[in-house]
Structures are given as C-alpha cells and as structure tokens.
Length: 185
Image (tube, rainbow, N blue to C red; front, top):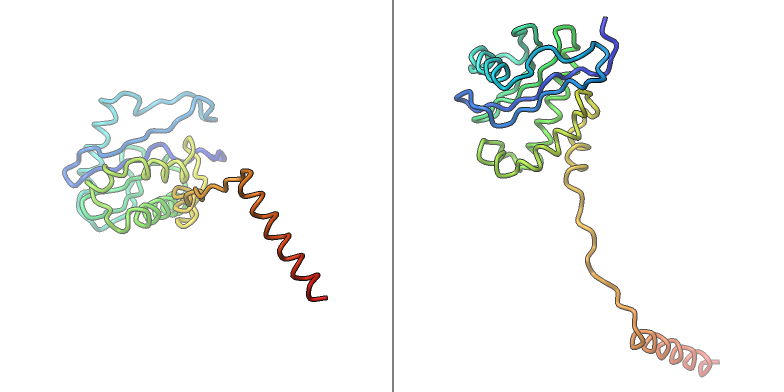
C-alpha cells in the first residue's frame, strides 16, 4: 500500500504526431520507495512516449495502464496532455489534477491551446505545471487558483512624488481651508 504523497512520475505534452512538446519526469531521491528505477535515460523516455502515443493517439479514452504506469490523458486540438503515475495510484486524483492543469492553461491562453500557442507561452504553461505538481506531489486541483497564481496582477506603477513643492501646496490648501472655516464662524 502506497501512503506517500508522491503520486506523479511524469507529465507529458505530445503533439498529434507523437513528438514531445513538453516533458517533465519526477522521482526525487528522497522518495519513500527508494531510488528511481525506470525512465531515467532520454532513450527510455522517448521509447515510453512513443509507445504511449501509439496507444492513445485516437481520442476516446482518458485512462490507460501502459508499461506498468497509469496514464491519464486529455486531447486538446493538436496536443495530448499526459499525467503518468504508478500502477497503484488513485486515478481520480491524477485525473482531477490533469483537468485542473488543462483548464488553467485554457484560461491563461484564452482557449487557444494548440502547439504553437503552448510553445509561445511555455513560461505560463510551466508555471501552471509547477503550481499543480511540485516534485511529484499534487499540490493544487482548482484551475482558477492555479491560473490566478500564475497571472498575478501587475503592481500599480503610479509613483507618488513627495518633494518640497507638494508639501508646500498641501500646506497652502490646509491654510486656505482653515481661514475659510474661521471666517464662517
């Protein structure tokens, strides 16, 4: 029974031809199940991605068990988003994390989630991924929270300049108001 928080082994975005757009593999050394075992080299990762794409290239499903890994995936125009976990992981948790990530990216890219848009805004996509998954641990499953953390509002850049002129102007205004009040009495 797996009682650790480490539930994600990899996150992938592949295009409709099976080429890698984005790939991030997780397995920290402090993982309770010991040192990383599979998908360490680029060659192993590419072979895994190619085989996974062959099984999932047609839209229809959203969860598959492939090569002793649980893969949750979602098609979006010319991209496929994958969240890879161990075979004993909770499918619903992986699915909700993937949907939250996908919805947050849709919000940030204004529904133009295609290969070109993702590559042009790769910084936002990676920030979304980091807000959703931290070192293999799912930390957020609410898409609006993820999107709001990624797109912080810009700070107000209007500067308030305080110098002798503004202080004198404020003093004159207060002096005039006080003289008007005294004159009304």
